[in-house]
Amino acid sequence: MKNKAFIKFFPFYAISIAPMFTLYGLSDILFVITFYIVRYRRKVVRRNLTNAFPHKSEEEIQLIEHKFYRHFCDLLIESIKGLTISKKEIEKRFIVKNPALIEHYFNENKSIILYAAHQGNWEWLSFLPLIIPHQASTFYQPLTNRYFDDLMKLIRSRFGGQCIESNKGYKFIIAMNEKGVKTLNCIIGDQSPAKTATKHWTQFLNQDTAFLIGADRIAKKSNQVLVFPAFTKLRRGYYELKFETIEEFPKDKDSSVLIDGYVSLLEKTILNAPELWLWSHNRWKLNK
Image (cartoon, rainbow, N blue to C red):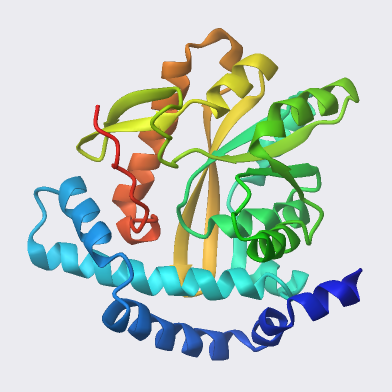
């Protein structure tokens, strides 16, 4: 099986085995191509930043934009590195500031939903089974390109995490509960919902913003603790992760309270380091 995967994804393995300093040199080249030549989603990024930070000057917006594209290119390289990165390298580059919070809830016989975002290096959340030795899963939307979908599942499951399609997430949680298995389930909550999807409107980064209803409902039905994982980038290729509790007893709360709690922590994290959020996503395509 490993040989088949190696052959199938050989170009990415060939990149991944390079040392980090070489990969960051590649990221620098990718930045020039993405930012100056292809101009990947430059209009979307500029519009999002201008609307989110109406009081910032054009120079300040340009600086955040520049830093974001640098970080974005690093993310692509760091994700590919996930194919071959060693446990020793991960432990050096990925620090969890307060793993005791997760252990506390597991010791109380509670499962956890990581209500995460496209912030920091969210793909490295798949490394958590090395640091927090419990059953971990990631709920995801399958990519339309089967090849890249298989590649991302391979990377995300390399250290023992399970990749669960979002529409099967609740059934998975119920099955684990019935088996008495406590789980750490990661759900990305800052995607833009479809027009027909059930949504919650709230103020986020100075704009009316629609948020998906999903993680909140699963948390309420299963009464799993909601925790927000906030990334800090210490320097290039080095991240610190801090867990912040959104709600310990979601079953007793309204969905709007749970989502607003998530939005508040996400906004605070973005304001601390705006370049670490995914500004290239067309986040505000829906109007209230």
